[in-house]
Image (cartoon, rainbow, N blue to C red; front, side):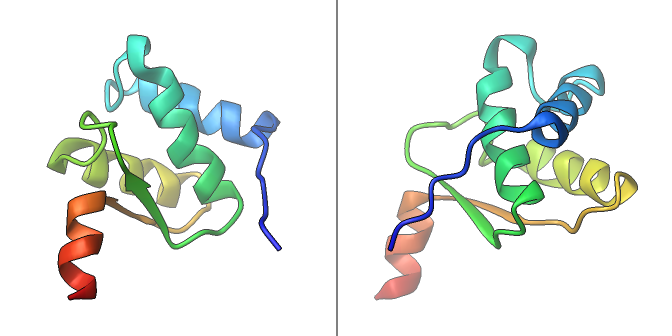
Length: 88
């Protein structure tokens, strides 16, 4: 069975924090929302297929820091190529 997670108040608040702290640009807030939804729902990773803005060092570190300050745990962010390479 597949789980589909919808953005809730907590995820939207977390995404807003990413933008407010300049971790995720406002024009890419939806990418931050993906990370926030995964964080709030206690997922381990976000795999970015075409969101190159989030699988870089600044968003990885910055979202992790904000997550911890907000009472959540840090989650991994990686590109699809990293997953494919790891699976070999």
